[in-house]
Amino acid sequence: MNLQQFRFVRETIRRNFNLTDAARALFTSQPGVSKSIIEFEDELGIKIFERHGKRIKGLTKPGQAVAQVIDRIMREVDNLKKVSDEFARRDEGSLVIGCTHAQARYILPRVIPQFRKRFPKVHVSLAEGNPPHLAKLVLHEHADVAIATETLAHTPGLAAMPVYSWEHTVVVLPDHPLAQLKSSEAKTVSLETIAKYPIVTYDHAFSGRNSIDQAFSAVGLEPDIVLEAIDADVIKTYVDVGLGIGIIAGMAYDPRRDKGLVGLPVGHLFGTHTTRVAVKSGVFLRDYVYVLLEMLAPELTREVVQEAIDRSPKTE
Image (cartoon, rainbow, N blue to C red; front, side, top):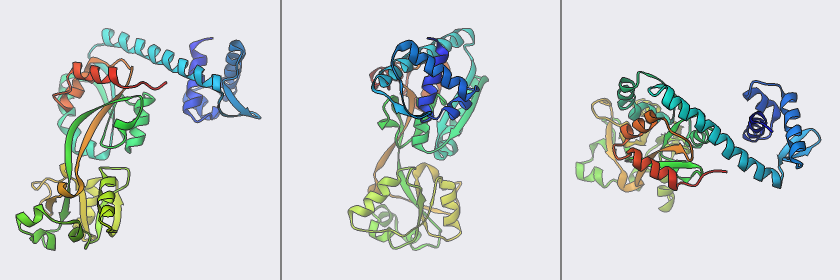
């Protein structure tokens, strides 16, 4: 047996048992992957995969145990490479940050210039997507860290740590009735009042949308959501053209920047949310990853991060 066979088995599982996709990801041929896996099974004396004709349908029971061992082995092999890089090229390398549009637009701009100034030889890439996709990127080690509000804290195999808390804000045009409310009235605006107007807000996978739906549902209201989008800039654009009122994450509204809109904080209606950063459990982190985490939130010191990694359950 050899590491190449381990890679073939792992990638076949990751690609939903599609040998063609696995071979493409590993820059090799499908027959070569199939032959290597069969030889590996013969050497072990067990069948790793369930087959229907020539198609692989899933893992056998012993195959599930083999997959867990392979995952541990390959994780440690990857860690060895990272340890080598850390001591041979301490201040250079690559950093892939998985993030939603909100984090890329409103949070990371205050961090990345500072990070680049400290580590000019580190190539930084942003991989945007919805939270479930970001979780998979980190689990499959296609991203070093992920930043999002949803999913990360509930994904086995990830160590998720809080970065900041936020609340929703309703944004309206200056001539909208909600903009005419007195300060005390705005602070206590009700769901019933908001539900009178067409609403533009987030897609279900983003920025606390579930809490918005649950709040209306809890009081028996069905809001008229006329448009859903994945980022606040689009929501604000459609509010600006008069499509409806917007419900966005608070950090996305800045009265100095959004001069054509009026914001009403509505944390009392939709609650407080926590954005988290996550890394994969059991993975060796380069020094500059620890620095990035502390730049995101000063309380995320190396010791705090390591403790979170140590206590988080690992995927097998």
